[in-house]
Image (cartoon, rainbow, N blue to C red; front, side, top):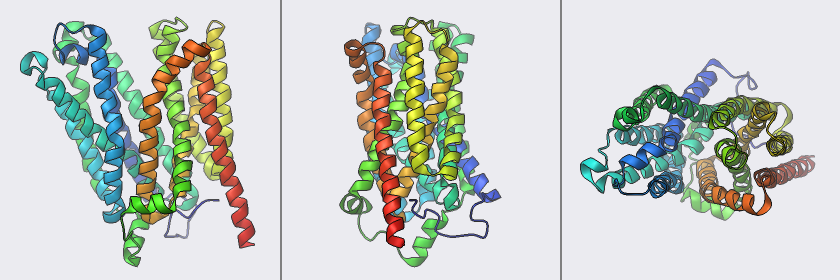
Length: 438
């Protein structure tokens, strides 16, 4: 059963109007640029480790410290998400939607302008850490806020494709970051990269982010929030307090599907290129070509699964997509174990099936009533992502040692099972509600 997301019906309630399409396009563009700003940091970990720590630091320790700063952005996400969601439920979605992209653009630009360790000493990594935390706060508010924003703008029967288009845009941001940093590494000498090349992706991201801020000026507040304002139906207490008191089941469901999303993205998209080199001994060029194909397929898959959710229902699409993702990931890792004869097409197929994560925000949007939707979704998503995003990489490393090279596929299958369980609950709840109405 789907809760009514769009509160203001229109004569063409099942169609996306020109205003809806413009809103989706601007939201997806801003999301892509903001996620690019967030992930480009990890693509430049090596030059950052050389520039922001003392010359005598061993390479592995310097990289570990840079990855620690990168992880700090994830740990800051719940704080940013909770605070921005609080004001988004009380003051308006649009204000926080614009603020989040500004808070991402500014620190990204400043990272590109930072003095390095040779210039200001220990202050360099400290400033890098502070700016990374600000990025984490921004993305913690951006992703949940964007999902709520687009879901409340479109007709109720088009929420699936709306949320999926935004998720697809986030994926494009990862792909842009990967391709741009690969091009810089290819066209520049190591000396040029350390001199000024590493700054270019951050400077570009900052400029593009401010363009996104300007573009979001043309967006209007969501009809759902405006209707709540008119009816004086906004939350009359701390929204998160109400979420934890009245909607614990929705929080648990949202955290469960966030685990599925985290496992799919972290294992299949982010970790597999490293695993295929370290465990299966594929060349780096082949690994990253496969990753580019998988990321592109993921962007398309998000749209396909989002459209399917509107056509066939969220529960069926989520369950079916989770099963397909399990099978495709298993086939990919079995092929790798047998010599990787079909690595590229199977990785692309696995990336496409990971597009089922495009259905996850629809599940979470539907789980909470409008008055506390932003807070409920943001708390559930950011806390679960911080926990599972933090434990997944070391856990996969331990599982590979203990269970063998198919361990990543086993983990994805286990996380997919959580999505199937949520889908079954949604279908059962829908049937119960229909009997009550009858």
